Amino acid sequence: MKVYLNDPKESWIVDRIRKEWYENNPNLVTENIAECDVLWIVAPWQWARIPRQYLESKKVVCTIHHIVPEKFNKQNLNEFLIRDTFVDAYHVPNKHTEHFVKQLTQKPVNVASYWFNSSLWNPMDKQECRSELQIDKDRFVIGSFQRDTEGSDLVSPKLEKGPDLFCDYVEKIANKDTLVLLGGWRRQYVINRLQAAGIDYKYVELAPIEDIKKMYAACDLYVVSSRHEGGPQALFEASAMKIPVISNPVGLSEEVLCENCVFDITKNTYLPTVEDVENNFNKVKKYDIIKHKKEYIKIFKEVHDVS
Image (cartoon, rainbow, N blue to C red; front, side):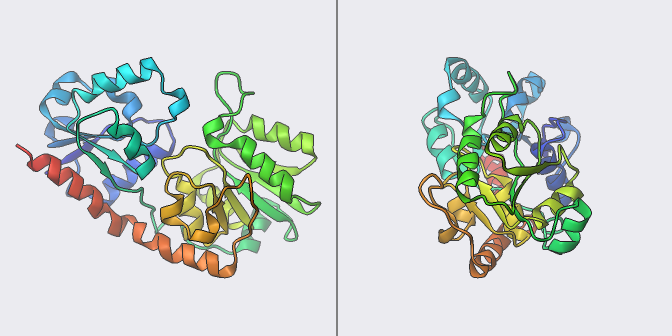
């Protein structure tokens, strides 16, 4: 059985997923779509670029990372239904997405959470990383490395990512020693809020992976404030690097993090303990791609073997 993944070439998270899958499954993959037995549409927004002959002749597994109900309009539904005619089975990363997708299709919907790459995400020395990033050792650093502003106007908050909730939370706990460390892109909304509140921040736009690792290591707290998520990857990355992380009950948070670290951040505040951090580190180990890839292989094999 050979699997081919469509290639978004966007320099974003799905490109990393594709790269890691190929690196860790050399005997299972092919770069030639004509040779594959299973076509994995890992970037579903680009499905229409795949030649129709392969959509019709191959076994097709489609990943739906997450759906924002408030943005799922008639046009989105029509596109889903057209693509659905070519799909043999779906993969979703969490139970929230599973529930939504099952209302749209009669095809099998398989849940397998994301993985993380343990050769990439591991603990680093906080003070060394702060020194390289030019962050004072006495600051209380709160991290957020995902985009938060709509690309249409670079002003409106991307509400599914919860930038308004993030800022509300930071404003509640900030003091003179607080520094918000921002990564990713389209951070205009959060930057404007932080400036209005007089809270210090440092923004590293689209940093390479090695610098992102240092940014995680520099954090005293990482906050996931999203309303809708597939993961996010930050749950795995922060936990694997032993960074204190808290999250709204969204995406995979309740599966990856210990109970103390998942709560409604609009109602409570919490700083994870050393024990919480260790618990998160131990919980995330089972999602190491070396172990967790078997969950995906099982999905592909089941689809492949159906006559």
